[in-house]
Image (cartoon, rainbow over all chains, first blue to last red; front, side):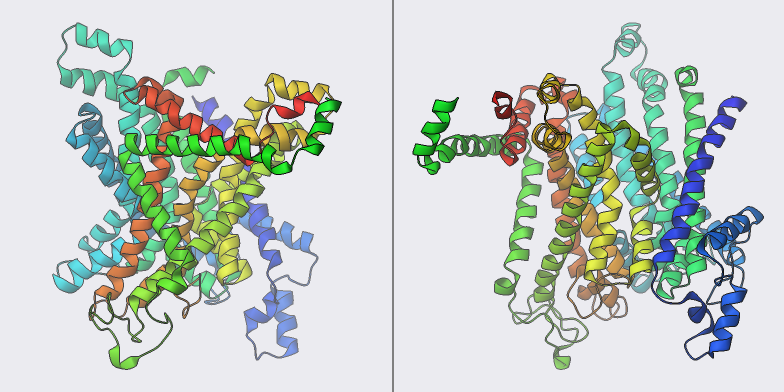
Length: 306
Length: 334
């Protein structure tokens, strides 16, 4: 097991390296002078030169790239152009907020999604199944920002029962969590339904039924356990996407997360901050993928021996 | 062969073209009707999508007013006979803005998805055809896929700045890997076919093999993919505009209309409801249609109760594929 994890960790190093390289060179394409942006439009030529030296922009691109890599290894992602504080100091607390929100959302999404998907599969072809299908399709189609606005309007402006912004109380978690979860609920419902339907058609289920096991044991004990293997992958991937895809939800509810930080950074063209946020997103996605693989081998021991 | 070529020269070109095309179109219509009967929800989605496309094309004729005409006296007016969906904070007619917004959404999504389909399919075919390229192309694709759409789009906007065409580029880049992956997988399996082997043996150039033998045979799944990615593109474009990083404000676009409604929603909720509903309806329509198409083409569902009906659409999809490049079997005669 340990060697499997180690192997997968090693395999993700080149991927991370490529992410870092892409993030560095993509921003070399930006028109304009980063040093001038750092000191502001009215600064003197000397100040711009001083900033250029301070930021290391007077060195050749490859040297800058090497410095960038060294900085990452040391945990230094440079200074924000806007706040002048180290990027890491800005990013870490925001990322913690995003993780909290995503965890809440993925728990809600997987519980609800697996429950609804199971109902739809057991009641295949009935009214309930069709209802779930339509609800799931609606869930995939609803624009998150619009759903967020409508909820905020109803619960905050009209009823005054929930706060519309920030994360001061536990109530403030409710709307952003639901908003972020909706797409994944729909996705997981559909995945669970199709996966369970496939399993329910197999021979060992017929055997279980022939033995005279109760239907709840057949579905809950035999079928669901097998059907959930692909669902776990989807849950993991959705979680990875949530960490980055919370951008819009965070913006609607003024949630102080990494997505909101990224939008602000893009608006202000704060390049070190954008690069830092992208690296965190990339790294967390790679780690989530790794975690999914490991969980997968627990659920389905056949994979380990391949 | 020579005699036939001579004969072809004598015959008017029209008579040769007409016969083979008229029949597939007729049967394609039949297949479409069959599909509508079997997949009612998907057919409803197709109607919504069709109406959306019509609205977008005929926006100048359909919109009752100028979408950008400011009339402060009528600001935030609720729906009335004059303004069927009411007005926004500057008194602009919401119905007209929603109609023009459809045009913007269609332009962005089509331009983006078609570009990514072309580039992605090309990269996927190259990766599958030349094994040396596979590693490089597909690793790059995997990395792009590791980020959510909105992050990739935001990064590209950060580099290029905002504006309609930069939104198109941002969305196109994000969807390239999805086409590349699909095209790569399909090409790998088509490459094994005897007719590709025959084409190689008869000394065709690689580019000719890809264009004439492989592409027509991987076309149908790529088209289904497109129906599923257009709504995704519409949504991402609206999301970018909502964040203030997409289509710049005075232009009528659903995302920026929602962004603008933020301040006024408590006074006049309709400014928030209208563009959101339009967006949701269109995305729902495309999703349901694409979903039905994919189900109909999925061979794993063949055994279920949809059984025989499925084949109707697979045949239809093949028609679409072969109609685009009608040269699957013919060149073998050369």
